[in-house]
Image 1: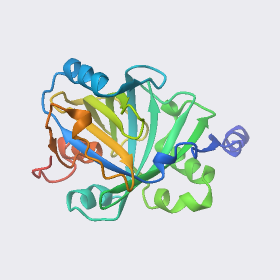
Image 2 (image 1 turned 30 degrees about the vertical axis):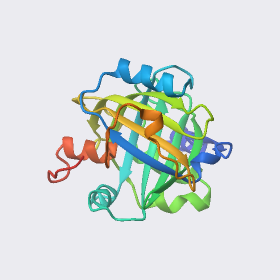
Image 3 (image 1 turned 45 degrees about the horizontal axis):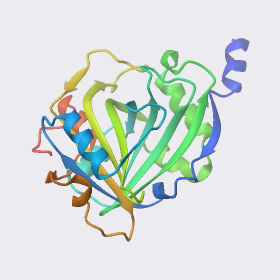
Image 4 (image 1 turned 180 degrees about the vertical axis):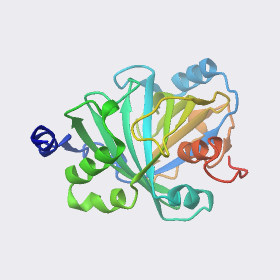
Length: 254
């Protein structure tokens, strides 16, 4: 018993800090486009021609995020109902099936077309893949600055693990950023005691382009996507996961 108490007392996470170097994370405009069954290679060449490629760790990253919500899936419902302002809370890591040496707790908000997020870097002191969700959430609460506690306290239930491949691009002047997301896979976490990658639910036809620009910059994004004219629409990967896994009643969500 003593060994367990000492282990818990050390704390599961070391908080490195909040990313304040990326000013674009604080507030920006985000436009999403859906291209069902798109040719990734063609679109990659298009983006490289209209802008430039950005590489973060790898040319193609694998992103994994666990979304936390309340027991009634209030964040998912708020998105489906178009309620604004709203928030989402997720634990994110890159390029490994289970969380590795660095993870990020992200608190994302939207107010009409303006979006932003707080991105806090943490280093787990133990293998999160072998740690219960209850302890992960409790230790996140213990690790965060007081100003970021409320969103996490309201969202204690792990719901969906979202996985996809992502590529990054920017306009020539760097003011516009774009990401290509594809090969989406969802894993149900609701009711699980720990992180589970069993029974993947794949959605290979979904291809999403997200274009971000600073708030107040109302330039058209069509130049970056020319000659494509994709359909602009709502596309929360978390909501898609809830719908695909049958966690919310089916709706016509795009």
